[in-house]
Image (tube, rainbow, N blue to C red; front, top):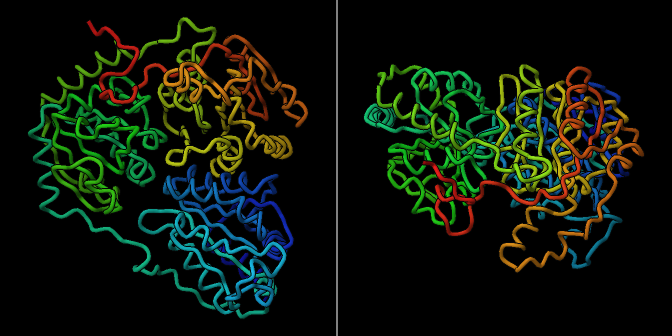
Length: 569
């Protein structure tokens, strides 16, 4: 059979149901074969970066049960995928990237010429530092075994992206479909240990002895199959929990949940970390935006126990009382199968945090024309009981959302966390809908929406139930605030003297039902209509005086000292 047909068959056999591409000559055989087989639905995008973000979103929305694929042609098609590859790498989402390459006999090989074939480029060398596996196929016999190997590696251990670079002559070769093994090379994919009896004894005793225990949930925890059941178990034990940005994506708001911690986190989450006597960190690397610039001041009164599938993340920035190298699912299973004794101190501690949360989780933007706190509080109300996928871009819009959104069952939020890539939200929304079949709400700033604005055309063309909220403050607000704080208000490159694009008009040009509003009542007329009748829709929200996040952690301060300072009575 034709080699590209065999690739299509392997994708189908591995439940790769959605893929994204911008066609070019060096992937034409692959695109034709995948479309002809028809098992993997390919969506044609307008930029390979958009295709990469959309493909990563398949894994995000499916909790890694499905693998997305993005295809790019050789040269610029391949390099345009790189930002999306890096995003999957840093946020630990499995995704398959396939690039076309010039014929093997047109490649420069070991010669010192800069380029031999048209659009020839060594993409494998470029992405080796941001993939779990990257390989250029030189023989048709290697194609299918290497493809299956790549798929397995993407999902094993700590998940991440893989890339296969396939020359044109290999794609069109005749091959016999080989029998492929689904076993992964353990030299490449690190398999973690389980939780030993001794380690679990340490954890169990620490919880029973603690007066103020706290769990910190990271992105490595929320995609595990037992995560939701484990959260319910915490609630039954009256043990409070908080989340990192990535952990907040799928953490349901219960009376035990006090939101995201860190530089833009809730005041209660930060207070809880600084006041607890036991902090158990599940699948979080505790980066600088979580701990502040001085990790030695993080959780100063607590024993810290860290669980992570990646051994290199253990005892990294924060020195721990105990570290356990295992996947979070193994830890959850130990927790669920163990009978923890009820501790009255835990209920008192939970009540203390609940009172703190009631006092501090309040609107700190009442002096603005439109309050982000009120906006996202009203989104919570409008989508109460509704299956929905939220996706934010990067900037103030992301931090406003992650601070105030309170997720319910069958709701998720998605962020570009480690990479923090502007332009992430709009194309990711496309993949999120295909993976979940749920309506999607895009939260994006007027700066970030410009980076992949061309994908609005795909949303309109496919008639996808995606609502885009463009929060227009006529600036790159987060960096502008940084400039005002540290550069005496010099705001070059972030503020255009009131000039901004007319996003309602742009939306209409792409065929989207579009609105512009300057107050929340007008915005939520559209939002509530979308809840009743999901469809392709854009709302430009004019917020010219919105330029910062409140509260926020200024450089050098410890977590509990966010500004503006609040009188806690």
